[in-house]
Every structure is written in structure tokens, then in C-alpha cells.
Length: 353
Image (cartoon, rainbow, N blue to C red; front, side, top):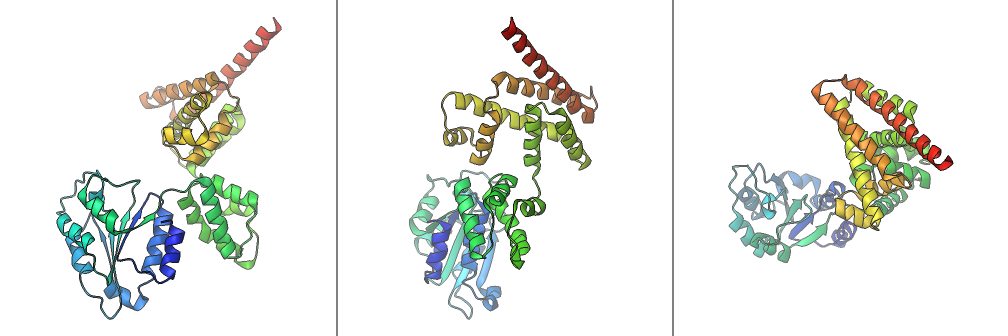
């Protein structure tokens, strides 16, 4: 069940005794969890609401709470956070969990208790009896990461509900500055709604002023300048990042990661892979793949490989101390633009002869 449908389900008076919120999208998990928490009146939460982290508390404590009758209320809510024992993860925690008792509870949940398991994972270990028992008894809420289209639609709906006018280019800017990640977008929504509370429309300028670019986004801009052999802008941005106390080695590592992605995307696209297939193959966010496809476009493979090789050499020089870390990228940029110019000149000479 999708989160929006789950919230409607609760508004219609349903009170599921056992709910599994499964998925890696933090904002969706929070929305589903908050909808459940709202069912317990504020003046009853001290006595009828309990939350237990399985890395810190034995599940038996949560079971004791779940099997208690509500105190001056109709329902009790018990939240179990991070039930890693439902996955293949091996924890180093020395906490003994009563998993047989938990399975017995799954088989026969207490009607006056709403037990909620919040599982921030892609999937559970389906081979385990405990997992099978849970999935058989629970209402399962899907909190898997949203793709860009779904994230856009969800954000547009939120702004519409608050009667806020966000212009399409402004929504594009929000998606770009958050790398298409729904949870990051939701982290910026309150700020944007506050800005627009006086009736002001959300423009590109407003989004640019209110939503800071993430480091990965700025590295993306840096890589774009490198690929365009725009040495002046690349060096200006690099120095700006250094002024913000970003470490040269970290910046170089992020650039290496971006170029590695570009090369992989280029090769897979040449083999006929579509955007979705590339994202699945590389296990990369679809929005990152979308941007990468735009970047590589008509760029020849050798140009990407040349830049990647140069950054590898730069990283080695930084780590071995053979060059000043802050100057290493500047030397790489000058060398790279020189090589690119020489390559273009060579092709021009060959075509003239």
C-alpha cells in the first residue's frame, strides 16, 4: 500500500493492529509514522505511546508494552525501530531479542495495540520464519524511494494543498538542487512554504536563494566546467569550495566518482541501455543517471577517460605529498585543457591534410 493510500485508510477509521513500514525513503516513512502517531491523543501519549530502537532495547520490552491494556484510552501504539533481525544483517549488538515471542505476537496481535515496525531497508530476508509471519499478518506500507516524476507530483500536490504557486522552472530548480531526492526536497518544503505564506509565488530566484546547493551538486558543476575546458570557471568554483574548507582530497574523490559514473553511463548508453536500465545496472539514483546522460551526450569516450586518468594521477600526487594539495587540481585543469586543445588541433590538422 502506498503512503497516501495508507493515510486515507487511517482517516476512514481503520486501526491496523500490525503495520510494517518498509523502504529507504525517509520522508515517506516519517509521513506514514506521523499519521499513525496522530491517532493517539496528545494527552494520552505519555502513557499509550512507546518507541523502541532494536539496537538499544530488547524486543521483549516492546512486547511487554504491546500486551498492556491502554491507559485511559482506546488504543496503545508501540513503534519498533530498525528491526534488523528481519534482514540478513548481522549485528554486533549484544542484545538478546525474544524473536519467538515476537513471532507469537505476529500470529496473534493485541487488537487494542497498534504495533508499527519501521524497517528502513530495501527488502527483508524472506527466508526467515519471522519475516513470513510478519508479512502474513501486517498491513505493509511501501516507503521505497520515489523516482523523479513521482517526487515532482508529490511536491506539486503539497504546494497545491497549501495554495502556493510554484512556477515549473522553480520546481525544476528545486529538483536539481536536491538531486531529485524526495526526502531532501521535503527537508526544504517548510522553508519554502514559510517564504510563500504572504502569497508570494515561488520563483527560480526564490528557490535559488532559499535552497543551498549540495556539495555533490557543486561538484557536478565543477565537472561540467572541466568537460567544457572552461578553466576560469572551474578554478573559480574550486577555490570557492576550498574557501568553504572543503578538503582537496575529498573534492578530488567526488570528482573521480562523478567521472566514473559518466564513463559507465557512456558505455552502457552505447550498448543501447535506456535510462532506467542504466540506473538499475549501476544501482544509481535515476536522476543522477539522467543528468549524466545529458553531460556525456556527444562527448567522445577518450575525453572522459583522459580526465579520469588525470584525476587518478592527481589523487596519487596528493596522497604521496609530491605536490601541494590545493595546487594539484589547478595543475590538472591546465594540463587537461592543454591536452584537449592539442587533440582538437591534431584532428583539425589531419582533416586539412
